[in-house]
Length: 487
Image 1: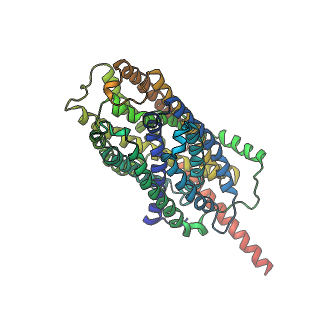
Image 2: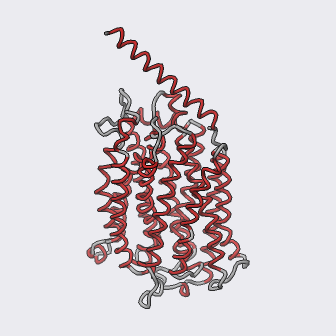
Image 3: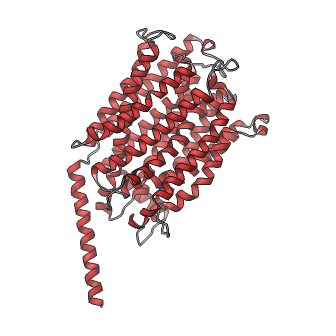
């Protein structure tokens, strides 16, 4: 492997901007935009998002396997990445700008369903192939964590920055909209900026890593795209204990994230009764939390096992995420509107965000280390299938999380198109809190337990890397001798 330069990490990390915009905007704002602003019921909105995730999830391992087997002049991954740029940009725009006839004909559900399905499937053509680069660019145990760290931090900061502008500018409170989050034009204006950032991010990663193509692993000489072999490979991968541990962690983690992210706007606006300015401040403090995580990750993992650090950071992060809600429900937290409420929420959010980002970065790095474990067993590099199967499970379960978010709102009897928090009954807010906090707490705890079952350690990984390098050198020497004999 050629040593990585800072530019390589930046280009790989630029894909995080894409994830932050597409994933972040859809997760944080689609539910509240379509249900509270456009008038589609929360149940139908959640159903559309969930169905789209199912279609998207199914496409992930197919595209991952396809890219593993692809032979082209521009490598295995780049054909898919370049092909995704235009469709993603167009569909992202139409998601936030439904044509007038759609609204007039009460076809919002159909529009949302079709647009979000196509958007997510198009995004998969970029996301899955680009994700594999963490395993292809380096096999170093700690360098991989550094790569994932760059992508995660860039993506998180991009998402948070856009959210800040959403609440602080596009969705700012005004005399016309006391709750600015109900301002339809704000979402439409933001979508134009989002399209621009998405295109820049996709081009940056694709073009920036283009020069690496000759040095990346190539497709096997004997390709097998048969459904039978595809299913056999999936079965064998699922039987790998360390991979299945991460798979289950991703499963429950995605359900928790899907639920909490979809309901976050409701939590801030109605449960805590924060103004747009206060929400902006709250999100602004998460940027230093993300930068703190960027610094913490190498310090926490240097000389230590990734598994142990990931488990601890997930568990502690989970506590800081849900504790304020439990304290409020128990009557032990400051009342809404008090001077100390926002500082307390900021403090909890700082700890939660920094630790969660650390855990997620380390988990992704652990996933990359499965590549060499499988290569020793099979003789093949299966980055595409390995990463895509993980996203398949995550998205499929994320769909369940989205449905859960809709069900939480239905259980709480949350009013449709609530203008402000005053119009949300107190008992509905209590039901919302009691449904939301325990659900997220349990799901994240199960995810942390699953990570603890991961078996790969530093010594084992380094031993496999040396074994594979020795096998490669032996193969090259044999080839050179054959050429000498022929000559």
